[in-house]
Length: 260
Ligand SMILES: [Zn+2]
Image (cartoon, rainbow, N blue to C red; front, top):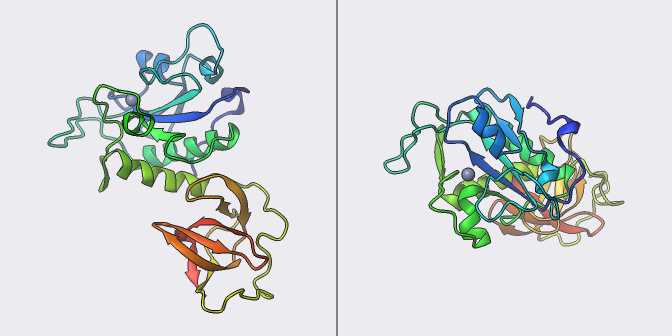
């Protein structure tokens, strides 16, 4: 069970993006780290609050703030994983303080909690790694490579390879919002709109619900309870476009659907 961010660390503020970094330091947050980021995740998953409030980076705020991303700090929350001291990108060597899997998972939980709190959609330009700031936002960043590699898993590489995996996971963690009336419903009385379309059942989300989104990884417009049956209209990588029994069309993460 990941740690939760205390509410007191998340003041009201008009924030539009979250950037995930690593510190390029050791496994614990040091005095430099807490000046640079809003929230730090240590190797064991412990959360450490930075000196500057998230609200200090809101548009229009004056005074000291967390400078975590060159020319892209306004409206941006800086989250950083304490790791990767003396790491090398090529050939890849994570060094003596590699990112740990619990730390990564905790980082994703932090992103999801912040996304919910500040109502930030899960998209490549709103929740992204530092390595994606240059390609996704077109703001130069001096060869920053946090995060193009996961020290414990080499399946995901590169700014977008890691970033897309990050967002897919964050999207499944966000939510809990109420479904629009009739979005889900009992599968018992499900009547297919088109019997040629394959049908799938929502599994493994209980007691939570599966986020139902306007676009792949995009705006959350509802949620589907366990056992809801949907028709699959289209496949967009790991995101599937589906239709519910009352005709709502949206996107869900395919990892929680099983053929009926
Ligand atoms: Zn960074």
